[in-house]
Each structure stands twice: as structure tokens, then as C-alpha cells.
Length: 357
Image (cartoon, rainbow, N blue to C red; front, side, top):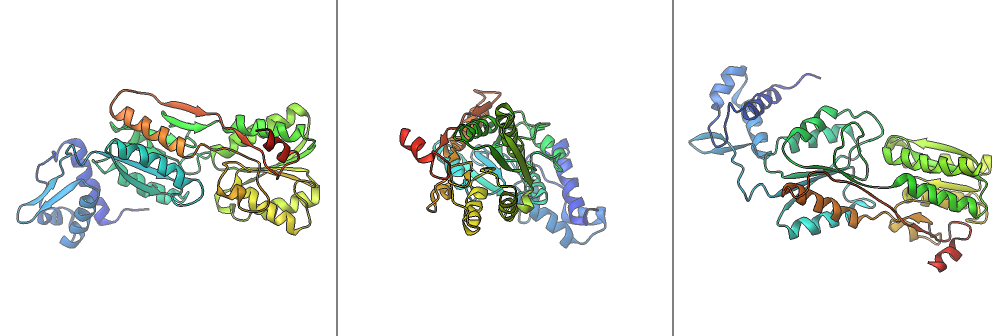
């Protein structure tokens, strides 16, 4: 897709700043000069300049012109967080953990959400790259199991002299620093416990376009193969998120599985509700498990057996890692967190296991 005229002007100015042609604190070309150079109206030039002002790259002074913004000590104390969601599911607790740490350290917080969309991810990555007042970036990438459509922007961001820390999942071809959970290990142990409780035919329901889903499936498959249990799996995409439980319920009804290992609580709870509507008793007819130990896990009379995602702790760890890298007390961050299993009444023996804890 060809760029608009104002985007071409923005790129010209940004390239001038990055190359040193327009130095920090110095005046750039006037609006009239840019208008003549690119054969566009001053309105088009003004739009480009206003966007770069918003992004913190330029400062306009009335009667004097437009200058390259200076990166002051105060303005630079800011950490950006780019996640797939912000206000939904487990993300508020992750954000709270990040905010708690960086506020104590005197940093500001910039929040961006991709809504798991490449288009929104590209837009926000460009804003972050072009903002000179960001000291570190904490990122959960979009659709991490697939080759990233924004790979060149991730590489450009990492090439900047600021720390980049991935959380929850990584882009395998790019990630250098990360804090993630041991997804494969957790689902392996969870699946083993289902098999030990007597489940012989298991269905896995996993997200196929992010690396978390692939790793969770890997743990599920490993446990089933080691125990020589009968198993099958359903993979779904981000776009199918809100409907996959209906598809899974139909498969369970037709094939008579006695356990369903779900990608997360957001799939497990509606699956339980659908199965109950179809006449299944949980856990007598089928055990159902989730992942994350979110608020959904105990929302109804069916209390989900699930994996405990660290949420706030993960946010705190990511923020501490960002601060330590800003201060150059640490150069590389590669941490994987082992997660506990929370047993409840959605699985056979769940209540007894819960009472033992």
C-alpha cells in the first residue's frame, strides 16, 4: 500500500533525525520549504509536523519555527507496555504489577493494546520507535506462533539503545530478553494428573496462532503419549476464540471424550456451561481444565481445575527487569516461571486434591 503525502514527509523528517541531519535542539526545514520540496499544501505539512510533535520528536515554537525535541532527564523516565489486551482477563493484574514497580522507581507508564491485530501492533510499534522519551519496552507480541508481519519493526526497535522485554510469549526469531511461564511443563503435569485420575480419552483445545498454545499442546501430547492414552486436539485462531467451545462440545458429544484440557479459563468456563446444557455432568461424565486461574475459574458452581498464572508477579518481574536493564545492572533477562496446578471440582478427584493442599 502506497504511503500518503504526509506520511512521506514524516519519514523524511524521521530519517533526518536518525541520520543526524536534523540534530537535537536544532531547527528543521520551515513549513514553506517542506511544502515546496514535496509539492504539497502547508496543511499536509502541518499534519505531518503535528503527528511528530505528538510522538515527541518535534517541538514547535511560535514565531521561531520547528525544532528537534531534546531528550531531557525528566521526559525520558518512561516505560512503554504493549500487550494484546489491557482491560480484559488477566491483563489488569499484569499491568498492576508493572505499574507498582515503575511508579516506585519514578518512571511513567505508556500503555498500548494491539487487540491481537497486526495492524494495531504495527501502528503502536511505529509510535514507540519514533518516541524518543521511552526508556524501555515490555511487549506481548501478536500471534506469536506465526511469522510476524511486523518483524522489521521489532528488529528496528531492538536495534535502538533501549531494553526490550517480552512477556507471556516470545517471537522465537527475534526475542532476546523475556519473562514467560513454563507452559509445556504445567500442561504436562496437569494432563498426567487427569490420566492418573482415570481419564482415558482426552481432548485438547489449544490456540494455534500463538506460541503459548503450541507449547501447551506439546505438554498435553507428551503426557498422553507417555501414558498411551487416546487423545485428539482442536486448534483455533484468535478470530475463533468466542466460538470454539461450541465446536469442542459437539466433538465431545460425538466422540465421548472423558477429559477436556483447555488453552485457558476463557475457553474452559463456556465449555463447561455448554456441556451442562447438553446434559453432561461435570466431572462425572467429563473432567475439564483451564489455565491462568483467572476470576472466571470460580465464577460459577463449577470451580475450574486450572494452572496458576503468576499475573501480578510476572508484571513485577518484567518491570524490575526493565529498570535493571535501564540502569545497566543486568544485560540479559531470560526467565521461565514454573506454575502450580490448582485442583477444584471440574475434575475427578478435584475436591479431594484441593483439600490436601
